[in-house]
Image 1 (cartoon, rainbow, N blue to C red):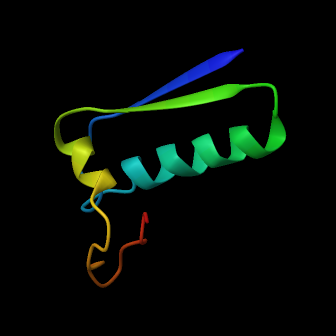
Image 2 (cartoon, rainbow, N blue to C red):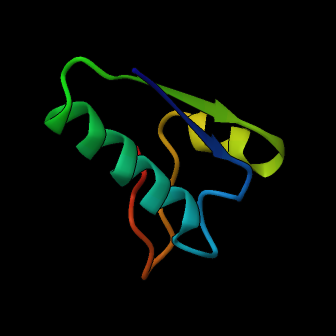
Length: 62
């Protein structure tokens, strides 16, 4: 089974991107036969930038 998760929200400001990545990680752990695909769109592409400085009060998505 394939699971597609689309993230189109910025990595910081809300927890939407962080929660989407948490769900993807848990699906990958719980269902080994499932292929999890993450598609980054619009502001979501900023989730893929390495070595980001996390603002106070936000989760580090890296």
